Image (cartoon, rainbow, N blue to C red; front, side, top):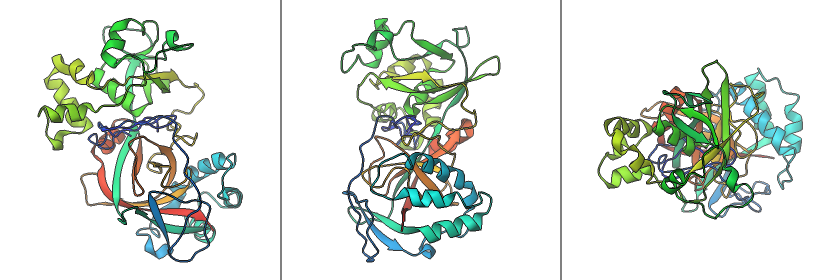
Length: 384
């Protein structure tokens, strides 16, 4: 979940990535990144279709025709295909009651550039199921997250003086549980020597902690990729909510962008705001041979694909599964109807019809993720 943003509370598994922000109000009100729990059992369908080996205590499933998926015929499925192949890479290695191996084997014979062949592959080998929440609602919240990218240095300079920390050496063999809250931790001296990079903006650094991963562009042109390494085991508390409670911002300003603007107006109060969240996230440097254009690893253990990966509640659906999503783009009535892959999770991603949509890396992705809080629908695709 790269930590994923969602600011009211979120943190994904290995990214844990992760959920942007998912609205910073949902975002800054969220945090993404601890190992999830598995779903259970065997799904039922009101249509009488053959049952599969997945059931959910928080969602119900009804088999539907492909025509029931809005925009299914219009989606360029060749853009989703690489993400599905990544899912297959992981699903082949997992013990699962769902027979992913057959459909993944058949995927080898499909041209990655032929969107109609890909559509026939899914229609022939999968059944689509409309997902409803336990209360019966067919719609739910769709938020967004992303991977931050910022300039920085591996040594402290006059410009780059905000540290990002690795897991403290003093805690590697034994540590208190939980560790000190953010303010106490920073002043304690235990973090000294654990700095792995320096950036310029303390608020951007805090957003990266919520996301759980990010990229640092170094002055020599190299890109340092950082992943989630652990936390101080304190609870996540949204500094967006802290600002709202004090009437420092309005609900409409409770986004990554709105919080950044507040910080620019109140530089002397930034630490006060950041200390409202006692949780502190540590990073680790990821291998340098990881392609810079790949997203962070999600809970499935594969790189996330921009606009084709989502984080989900594992009680609602199985990790790695294809999912069709129908929503709208942030601050717009433009439809967002795409085949995506359930490749990540997050603590704030809770519910049957609930997803965190991965927008990608960088400022443009952050802009979309930070404003995304849409109503949407989901359809789970399972092997026949």
